[in-house]
Structure formats: structure tokens, C-alpha cells
Length: 268
Length: 316
Image (cartoon, rainbow over all chains, first blue to last red; front, top):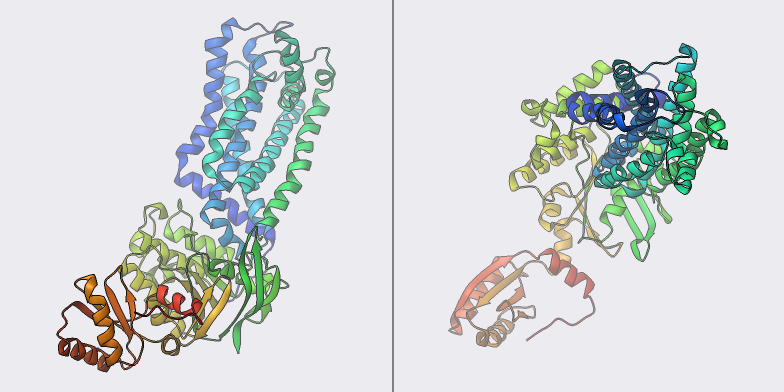
């Protein structure tokens, strides 16, 4: 019996990269689900931009599709929680996570590998959406720097979704429960400023929509891209960029340690 | 030297005690079968020994390293085939083995070469590029086993490796375990099948309620357990008492009557000789039986025996 010597020094980072590669291979092997996740927000743009858009009036004036697109960018990031949740919950339920945990690799690599893959998924999703946006007449008006800052805020939102998705998946360990997430993202999306301006809603609902974390990212993007519909007299609207940084960081600060705790509890 | 040393291991889940002070020692290069019914604590034991679960109390050392204090060193020396087939369903067999090779820190070329070797060894070359989701249960098990052997670990854990497999796939797993044991690997496997333990193991540890209730070489354990039994199946319930009386006079052990199954059994202390005596006694008494067999104790009987120690046997 001869043990094969391990070659070279390996870091948690290399293990994480191997596991990110595994996720990418999944997508190459089974492209349909990932293509659906990339194209579904495009469908939303077409439905709301063209089917319902004619009836929409943007308070303060401006083109509805220009108003809509930052909202759809944020929705695309929000939907990402489903991708993360499904992948982590499936591995946990099938015993694959346990096998990884029995290997001589850094345990953080399993989570970091997932985050790496989902980060790439987010960049792909955003690229597709920007392509779609440009095709329907959306533009950024205030220079590349601010546009990139807006993209950064969107990716920060997605990072929070990665952390929340991992936490929920380790908590529930039930891949089929993603159906609940698929339903719950809708009230979160509609009770925000993504589709319509909160000013058009009843007072109480407008307050909810204004303070909705998703609204902060959307409003901040409208501001950074120079798209119509940003601003307003509410405190959240006036501090959109700060809130678009604070909300995801808060979610990460809460969900992150809980996810780590769940991960540690796997050995109970 | 004992490669697996378990001392007073305890683990409690909510209201059940999965491990209740379990002791076990497995010498290097031997196969140990942990035998027990569902819920006996077998899986928890494997999870503790493979560092997946932290015990509440007691110590466990694998390949010389404590599972709690040096889990990394333990992980570098073990292979695990868990109860659920833990291979990637979307990837192909080859991709899976390369992935696990990379996670064992083999260089890319070495990981690919090792994957090829294992595919050949486990007869999976034909299906190497098909998604594992399309594999049969036996093929998955083989891949699972191959993935655990990337580095030829000195210690291998198999948690119910043949549960749910058809007889052919089961035989393949048995062959693989024997080959590994022949090459010097220390193997700990859990099973619900007495026959499997009998066939593969150097030592059998019978576990019930989180404790080892009996341990030893299969043949010695069998002798301790009252060995095999000769079983007489009667045509009608009215014959049971007469058959039992006849057998009581003919053989050493007390007859046991199972009225529901119309069965009377006695310990086959001298095996075939006992069987011959039983047949002769029945013929002399002019009794007719539906069936007479010499058979090994079932796991149920082993447990009945071990847990009913001190209780009187139900005699007619």
C-alpha cells in the first residue's frame, strides 16, 4: 500500500478555486437552469417595459424604461439568492457537504468556493441585463465611474444574497424549499421602488417601500446612472447611496455569523 | 497496534443517547464489522470517527490521532463512504474522481491519471463521462468507493455499504473490501446483515443502544451465541407440543417454540449430527414435519439472545 504524496503546498484559496471550478462545470453540464436564471429578468424587462409600461407614469417625468431598468438590475441580484440556496441545500441534503468535510481541506473552502461561483454568476447576470438594457434604450448618463459604482452596489447586494442564501440553506437543508423563496422574493420586489414609485402607493405601503432595503439599491443606482425617478423628500430617498451600502452590509453582518454557526453545528 | 481506538464514547441527540459509552479497538490491517439494527448508533460512531460529529464525552483515536484535537490529521488518513452516496450527480464519474483528486491536493495531471486507474479498477470506464445521475445503484457505490480511495488511505470507513444494493452489486463491494483488506487497509464497516459481517470481518462488534454488547471473531461469537439451530416446521399447531417433547429427549439444548410460525427449534450444538438425531427422533415418534432445516441465527435472534441474557427461554 503506497500513499501517493500530495504535491506542493495548498491553501484554502486553491481548494476554493477547485470548488468554484466544480460549480462552473455544473453549469456547463446543465446549462438550462442557469440560462433561465440569466434570462428571466430579461423577460421581466420586456413584460413591464412594453406590456405594462405604456400605462406607467414616472413621477417627476422621464421614460418608464429608463426608470424600470435599475429596478430590474436589483431584482436580478435578488433572484440570485435562489441559485445560492439551491446549490448549498442540495449538497447538504445529498451528503456531498459531509464528504467535503471529511477531506483534508480547509472547511472555509467549501463556502468560499460557492461564493466564488455565485460571484461569477452575478457578474454574468449583470452583463446580460446591461446588454438587454442598452438594447431597450436605457443608458447611464453620468459617466463610467458612477456607472461602475452603481454596478458595485448591485454586486454588494448579490453578495448579501450569497451569505443569506448559504445561511438559509444550512438552516433548512431542503432543496425543495426554494419554492418558498421563489414566492417570497415577489412581495419584497413589488413593495419597493423597483417597478413603480412609492409616491403612487397608499401612505403606509409607500413607507414600507421607501424603507425596503431593495429600494435603497435601486434608488442609489438611479442616482448614479442619472435615470429618472430618484430623489424625493423622504430620508431614505435622500440617503440612497449610504443606505445601499449599509443595508447589504447589515444583512451580511447578521447572516454571516449565523451561517458560520450553522456550518459549525454540522458537526453536532 | 490498534489503528482505531475508541474509549467511552458518548453522544446525545435531544432525547436519545446515540452512543452510550462505546468502546472499540480495531487492530491494523483488519476488517471490523459493526453490526446492529437501525438506531443502534452505528452511523453516529462512523461520523465521530471521521470527524464529522463531535462526541460529548470519551476519546477516539484514528491512525494515532485524536479525532477532536487533530481532525485535520485524521482526515488526511481516512477514506469515507457514507450511507448516502455522496458523489456529484451532475458531473460524470471521471470528473468526480478528478475533482476529489484535486481536493486531495494532487496536481492536475496526477489527479487525471489517478482517476483513470480507479475507473479501470472499479469497472467504470464505459460510463466515465456519463452524468452520475444516470448510474445504477451499484455503479454509484463503486464510484463512491473509488472516490474514498484516491490516496489509498490506511483507514477506510464504510457506513452500510451494501444496503439497498442488488446481490451482484453487493458481491462487487465485498470483493473490493476483501482486496483492500488484503493490501493492508484497516476497514471499519457497519452493517445490518450478520452474513455480511461473517463473510468480511476479522472481528465483529455487535452494537445495541449505543454500546458494544458483544465482540469477537465471527466464529467465536457464533459459538457464544448458542450457534446454529435446527428448526422443525410443523403441519399443524396441535403437533407443536409433541414435537417439542420429542426433541427435548433427543438433543442437549432446550427446544424453543414459535407457535405463530408453527416452529420448534433446538440449538445445533453438533450441527449435522444434531440434525440427524432430530430426524431420527421425529421418525421414531412417528411425527411428520413440513420442513426441517439447519440454519444460522438471524440478527433478530442474536439480539434476542444478547438482550435477553438472564431471562428464561420460552420453553414448551
